[in-house]
Image (cartoon, rainbow, N blue to C red; front, side, top):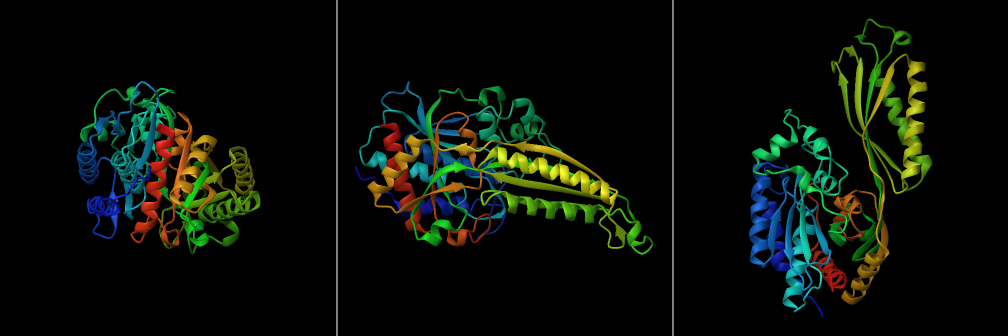
Length: 411
């Protein structure tokens, strides 16, 4: 069997979805539960139904498009990703995994393949943390990592609760029904752009993911003493921002010393009173710390907290840490890795095994079932920007590898 990928059709659909955006092209912005998000969902549903798939939408908008197998009582195979997009993003992140899974099914249908296990194309709600300051709310809730009560308590920047926003967008029902049973899926495999430079640098077609790094998000607040920038002598200051800057550099130093697989980032900082002639009395930051080794990541966090308390005492400030999330890493299943490897060989695709340092919905699907991920190169490793790009050749090759993998897992 050689599944034929209709790349012209797929590119047309990717471009059509990219035009559903609150930012003008080439930027793409689709915030979850926005008008653009709803329009994108409607486009996808029409495509699913045209392919003969049955569509189910759960109470928070996770969407399942099923190709029913010859033995529908068996646990199925899932594949998919997300279509929400951060402000000023690109057109391939997530969407290649959703529309690519649909095209993989169409290629298998055209090749005459009959799946034994049903295959679902899953579009996860809210993979991006843009609106509710937490990523992967759809897959977190689906896998039981996030309870309905915790989900409902999330608020957007305008103070609207998740439950209010999803209901206003037309998604209703008991959120306890979002969680899937442990035997719902036999396996899940996600196609995604790499969001890194390794495949392109090695001139390879496919990345076979072996593990997904464990993300932790910490809110850090430093409280010092304000004062007039001209009136308080340097030796008398308890500057919250200077202390915060030293903590950020401590994070960098600890991450560098831990492992090449350890990364630490301060991507947000807010200083008060934010006046040019006033000493900051408060600095609030958010840290993102990741590692494929969860214990090593947690040791880093312990060292960071302990070191920050020592620093705070020395500088005469106070520091508070709040853990927003600290998720465990996920290992991809050997039999899924083997299926992807065999698919690469069947498609004549060059490949390498690698670790995903970005996290995806697959990280939480790993709580439900064995998982795998297929990466394709993206130009310059660029993602989350309007110039994000994956070539038609690499997209087509990735979808063919996905189709062959799904055939093995569902057959």
